[in-house]
Image (cartoon, rainbow, N blue to C red):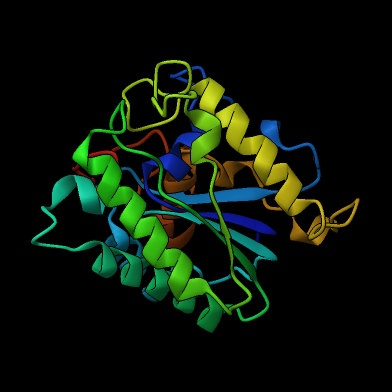
Length: 239
């Protein structure tokens, strides 16, 4: 399996993208031998991530480190009455516990969910901050690190502006450059100078082609051939 996994929602998935000026995560890493797999999916809430982890997504992986960021869709899609910050925080803690249960030696770092809205008067900003405060309390006294980059992607007036975010919710390429500097500092003590080749994974496991290759691998002759007419077709969105 991969030494480093990225767990969460679209903020983790977008490490694989180039359409917004981003560079795939592997090319960001200063420690070049470290292979990383993104287990982030756009639109996911904490319970979506938890379901994936509990239903085989970590099978075959014993990562040395897991980076987690999730929760923004919980606060975006539901009112505070439907889901108070404490409930979102408990979902994040459940994700951490599930990773620990399935891979006890994995070092985990939870990133605070990003500020939401351009300025500090946006009510979503206050709610996300409350989630982060609750997560910090839930992780206190554990061996799980809690890391926040929010002040590094806002200006002196706490504006989450176009310098770091293309929509006031998600990071742009400059924002990801800030994030990766923090990640490189975090992973430096964890990974040796060289990672054993056995820890690496094929290039086909990165990006959208992974699912196609995986289907051919596990379904065998379900398809007549990669260029033939399929007997199985998937319909849906980016998931």
